[in-house]
Length: 485
Image (cartoon, rainbow, N blue to C red; front, side, top):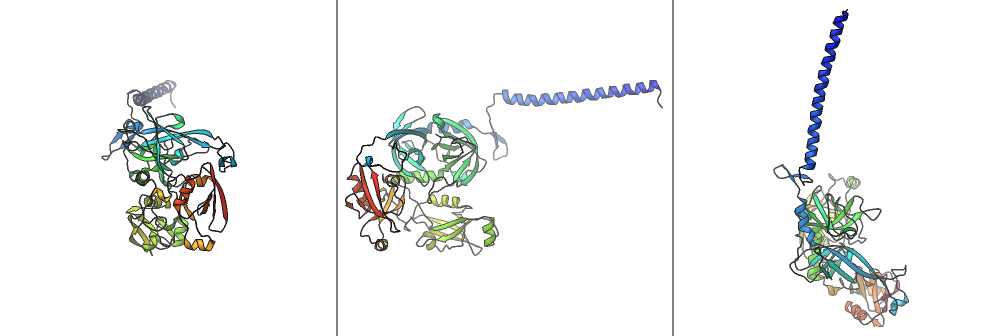
């Protein structure tokens, strides 16, 4: 047993040792906290404007300079304000008898959006839904100069439109390449949300080749770039640019339950936008190329059914007679792996790659046939199976919004009609607003018998106020439509 004085000495030594340890620990923690606090404080007060770091080719961290990308794009993004008329009746899709006699005084409505200057001489690309059915299109530049814009053409299947203002030496955005864009890349959305002009937001590419079924057409090309850059109403038609300030997409849609941004936005890839803009500028209508196939996405279930080794490619579900694929020996059951050396793993990716071409273009398609990879050179065709290019006179870009052809003789015989023209493609315009559907055969407009597509435009041009259109559908149902002019 310890004596009382020995025990007291032992306790004193233990206490002093504990105090020394506690002091040392406290000093260490104080030093560590001070260092962390200093680092945070430095980050906040050292004047740095860096908001993110990325690795360069050498693997070193370098700052992203959003200022450069902003300065290269802000002056090329415009504010678009449109005026259009809509009937005050709740039956907006129908015409009343007042339309036939010009007695109605429709109210003037306004809408707004964004657009991107793509050339120094005033060509501007935007969304079709920003300008569709607009009677007046006004453009305001970032420096507040204002212009009246001319509508060059529209393409509802990609939700794009091309405008033109009369000006020179404008700042414009340089085209990038959306194929080079990768998930995780930083991007900026530039536009005019909620009428707040010249707004820039940043985010990353969240996904590519998204099909969100928003355009509502079997012919639509939906291969959206998905980002988390904040986009709101008014951003439509604005620019999506990379950190170099190059145009990589046209902002078009948001994922929303409220009408406002809740996390994701979607942009049309610039490679599609560039092709559509060139077509509209050169031809006034888009030159759509087709493979002539029906396709299906390959998932785990289909891969098991087909006994595939990998879940890759796009399954060819059907072949259309007279189409490009049929002429190139592509068959039902084949799997398309690539187009021009670029892998395709979804229908949206395939449609995007084909949509970059015109009828008559030759592409190389990689196909797995009987578990062997083969390559075919395919000459793409138009909707009718030929390689001819369309022009506005074909009815693809007129106020009626319809592409027309003379009724096929075998169909005319089966229906018992002696004359008429058939609507083979329908877009926004007079006919669609009147309720006319694709496939309708126009036999008579007012007092005029219709023999050719030119007869349609002639009959409509000769009448003001309103006119009655008569015809028949391929199933034998006759129909009559009133069109207000």
